[in-house]
Image (cartoon, rainbow, N blue to C red; front, side):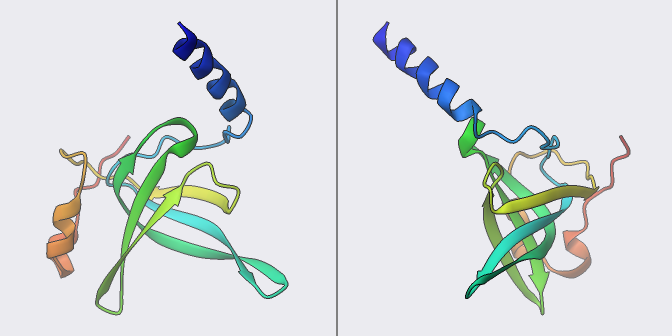
Amino acid sequence: MEQIKNQKIINKIESEYLKKDILNIQIGDSIKLGVQIREGEKTRVQGYEGVVISKKNSNLNKTITVRKVLGGIGIERCFLIHSPKIEYITVTRSAKVRRSKLYYLRKRSGKATRLKTSFK
C-alpha cells in the first residue's frame, strides 16, 4: 500500500517536467532534433537528423536512439525526450517496420539501410 502511495507522489512530481508538445515518435521514423550545445559562455542549437532505431523506458525517462551515417561511419546517440536540452523534434518521414529494435541496420550500408515508407 505504501509503495502505491510513493509511486503516486513520484508521478505527480514527474508530471511537472513532462513536455506536452512531444509527437508520437515510432521506430523507423526519420527525425530532426534540435539539441542545445554550450560553447564557453554561448549556447546554440545544433541539428541532428537520423532514424529512430529504439525506444526505451516511459514517462520522464523515455529515451530514443537515433542513428545516422556521417562520412561512411555510423553514429548513434541516445536522447532523453523530455530533456530541456532538446529544443524541437520533427518527424520528416515514417517507415513501416515489423520490429521494435532496428539494430540490424548497424550491419548494413548503402541502399540496404532503406526502410519502406508508410503513409499515415
